[in-house]
Image 1 (cartoon, rainbow, N blue to C red):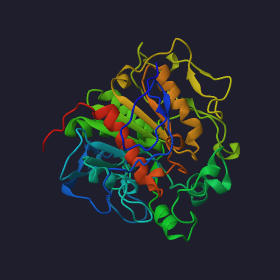
Image 2: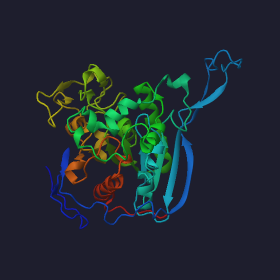
Image 3: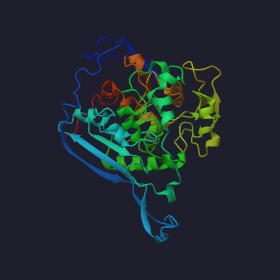
Image 4: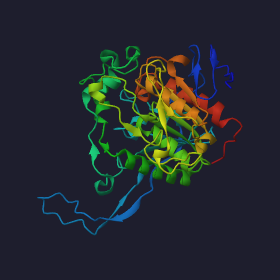
Length: 415
């Protein structure tokens, strides 16, 4: 049953936030930033540093030295793989009981959560300035983590310039998806030659091509991080949305909340949003429902063939016909043990397809709040909302939700 939740006096006009299973929050425009500190002026850190988790030694079985350079063979030599780079910041005044672990999306690194292309502090700094301990990572095999080709397999190249304009910086021009025209928040022109776009595109990197290996290594590294730091909130974006569910499935006692930004997988197969010539035919992308590797169901599932799916007869959202489980639906018991927030920008392609993630979770007994930012008065955002001009406002919304749904009644531990 949906319940009406009253928010605090910092909201100038709040209509109703429907917090029921898979509900969509709704509100009038409000000043989300009221009472929050500006990280460009008030960023006070008591300690910071870096470390790695999950590194495991292995012996090379193939020669990884490139031919033609006269280099010795690597066969029989020992190396490390599986490690994940983690940087952390602890504010001088810790105000919140759980740290936030931030995991970036595809073709990105943790750099995109430290600062924006136009030079403003990023989400990591916003949350630190406002009293959260923050752990910001580079995914396994990316950024400041070695890509161990022998174990990880080939990489995909960085996403090309044209597709980034079509999907992220100039989506309002190309109009590939239903509400792309609402996009207004990208800094600068969104084209090559603009210094902000150039900074953004310079940050794009290659990434592991195999989704099964990607998710498996991400789950292992995320579990290792939680085993080291203790209870935490997981914040994911885009590609890493599946990781939040997988890490929570393995450590439901340590994951206190999952914030899924524009991600979480598309249940069973990809609904097409955009020109079919770009996406190709739909393929089974998540044979385990939301993910590509095993996750805990009840009744138990030992092989994905035991899951049965159907596609809705009519579109939802109203753009996409979601894939859901055939009744009786199996539950995701471990994901039922923590709060879930799913957020999309009103101008993003995810505004259409991400609703299916929420519906799948709901069907599996997982209470979650699905929010289109336009419905809470935060307008004009696309997929890379953490880089856009109103990024702080979105971070403030997330923080308020965490306070009310994850942190309420939990004491802040002293350092």
